[in-house]
Image 1: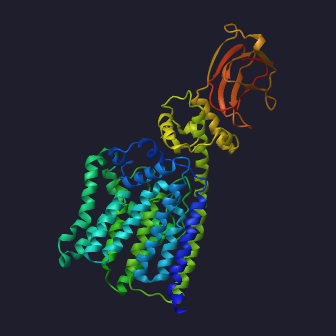
Image 2 (image 1 turned 120 degrees about the horizontal axis):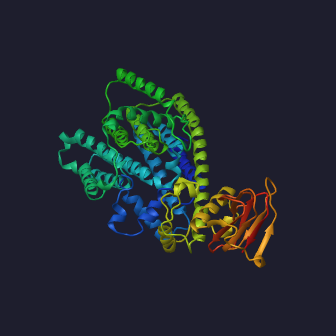
Image 3 (image 1 turned 180 degrees about the vertical axis):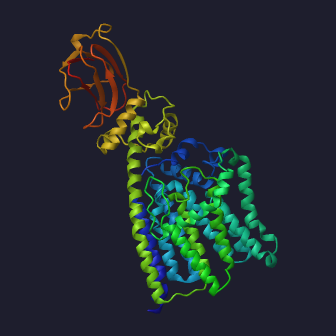
Length: 551
């Protein structure tokens, strides 16, 4: 029984890791590649130094690019499941390392609570569910491992810490904050262990500077005097947002910015508790200054590079901030042993926080699922129109129905598909997809083929009556529609009011392709290029007078 009680937290951690893995993979089972991932897939198709080392926005992304290339090279582009498995592995490792870090300070039960909060931090759903954010999660994972290795306080630990710090930097710029922690550790131990171990932080820092001199300086940066002056407020909002999320009180919408309304008073309360704790038992552990260096430098660097959309409460940024708050909290409580009642209270608060976080994770998962549906439909439309679509054609938001494909152009997309396979729906799958998918696929097709019209006076172009079909006029609910074949169709409209033309193909209950209005007594030439799908187009003509369709 004593052995079971002693190892119960580890067993429960194992169950939590398994549950987190199942949850992450189940929620993302229908996902395909999303948003910035396309920059890796399309803009870095070679294997030159440039493909690995050019910055993404202003970030170093060497390891994420290498992982994406390896997975696509092995498994192709027909599925995004491998990248989700890789992301889940990183997140689970980060949660396990958090358990180890906290257990060394305040015992296994509190460590289990910290790991649960990080593993199921659903208010930071983009990091948990979007594999592109492996840069954030990987930097945090390797950074926590680095902090644990520094605690060995020996040469072997230092060597491994240097390697892990380099890996943290290779995942993303969050690793710069762990360089700050390693520097603080060096200063704390310099008199006892000398200058020789400065390489632990110096080597990763020099590698980052070399990258910056060669490639990183080409990225757009946003360091301004205004950002520097506003950085203290950003720093406080960062801590407040992290606490807000950990407490399960974040109410930031899935697709809109928000504020840490509960986090600010909670931050004030926690600062007051720290001050009171210092009054009762003065002094901070050396590890607290290391974890504080990570957290403070992280939020300050984010503040210096702020632009709209990068608020401190942004769900992408809060994951790392929440992990750093947990590290700081463990270091503040180092050596404290909690009684059974306190542990039960902590367990209850943890469970209360997990509920809202899981709900937010589900909301984020639903949104990403819709984005995946749109991605598969819009890229299917690209492939159907491949014969005629211009290489420079881009899936801009007004065409694709989503901003997540704005960096996808036809030329690069087809290069990647030819090399690695297609993630898109087949025409048959598209025909059975959700209505929103078919709606935007029709619009993409009309623009990509492209479908064109030109209108002329009726006398200028006479239709061949032997190949024409006359339809009566109709308005309101009684509007005629005509099936069209690829090629040129002449639409002769009798004199009278102007008519409105619209097309559909994969949709059934609407006509999403608006061709505009044409005057009465005119002939409109409608050109539909031939493509690779067998589904016909249907034209709706809304006008009270009769019309004639000449194929």
